[in-house]
Amino acid sequence: MPTANKFSKLTPEICELAELCSANRIDTDLYSKYDVKRGLRDINGKGVLTGLTQISEIISSKTVDGKSVPCDGELYYRGINIIDLVNGFSERGEYDGFEEASYLLLFGKLPSSSELAAFKNILADYRNSLPKNFVRDVIMKAPSNDLMNNITRSVLTLFSYDHAANDTSVPNVLRQSLGLIAIFPMLAVYSYSAKKYYNDKGSLFIHRPQPNLSTAENILYMLRPDNSYSELEAKILDLALVLHAEHGGGNNSSFTTHVVTSSGTDTYAAIAAALSSLKGPKHGGANIKVVEMFSDIKRNIKDWNDDEAITDYIAKILHKEAFDGAGVIYGMGHAVYSISDPRAQIFKGYVEKLSEEKNKMAEFRLYTKVEKIAADLISKERRIYKGVSANIDFYSGFVYNMLKLPVELYTPLFAVARISGWSAHRIEELINAGKIIRPAYKAVQERRDYIPMSER
Image (cartoon, rainbow, N blue to C red):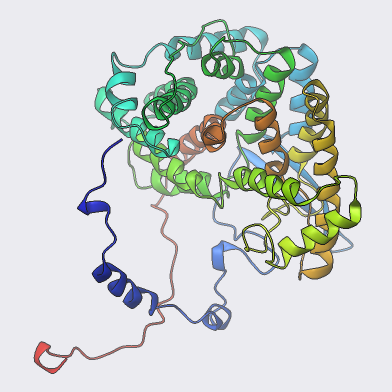
């Protein structure tokens, strides 16, 4: 790891200048005065309509008697209900649901068995296409404690190895996208291996991906020293990838992909921007906060069956008296969903099965208790314009923990899944190319005269 230098040192002079920056805060009342939708959302949390998409759709309310009322959440990939998609590949008993979902997102249709087999072969070929010595010279050269930064740097470096990097024609962008979908698991796992060896002083082993294994299977195969995994582990990780692959064009990182793509930039820059968005704890890092919160709850509640004790402690967290003092019950609530998050509902059944296999049923029951109690408390104490329920982050961290996946890989795994959605959105923006995306901002700074230097 590079040693600290003057570049990374926070000096008193910088801190003093930062106070000048902070003094320029905008009066929050002005947002209401000018009817500005902060975060591109209205007071009910509904996003401002900024574009059209065929890739995915989120339903959180329905019109009844002319009024919008909350409903159980629904998620569609290319018009197909996510529940039907999951049931379809689950019945086959395969671990290639992510590959099927990726095909659907990219091409707008469900693949036949032969088309899916051909698609999987393409990905298998690309998994072995990393440039010679790339792992050593790029991933291992300057390992970071933040794997998302390592992955982003790797993606940007791939530009230098692509002789058609700036070609934004659909065939070329599709080639680049398929390559990134295939190698993202390796970028994530190898970045973790480098961090573990160089920064944590642990052991180093590099396992090559196997062409006959699915994306989910290869992640477990490459990550574990003995390459072993159970059928249920592969099935649930595959499901997690499917549920994280896409979530409407309005989520922060997919919107970022549209915005950056509209400028005409290259694929590697666009995906690096999406990765930078996903890295944010308000987007891709939420499940880590859930895991940390539950560790705190388990330390402070002796009897996990004591509903009263659980309620009291959750109330303390909500009142900023416990855990991190933020007053947030992590994993509860969503920017769009109200009554339920379909991804969490699907996941929950499989989480229970994995809990049984891993002898973690006591923890699973604690999760379900906290889910119910937190929803009730938040509804009573907070001004909620829509319902509040557990989102997928509430359970995904628990699943990754049972799979013995390192916490550092939680957000990178999100990226491994979401690269399919980002690629689909990038291609959609290109084939419907119009003006560069440029929203308006209302200037609220009063006009002032320039003061000569001698008079300041």
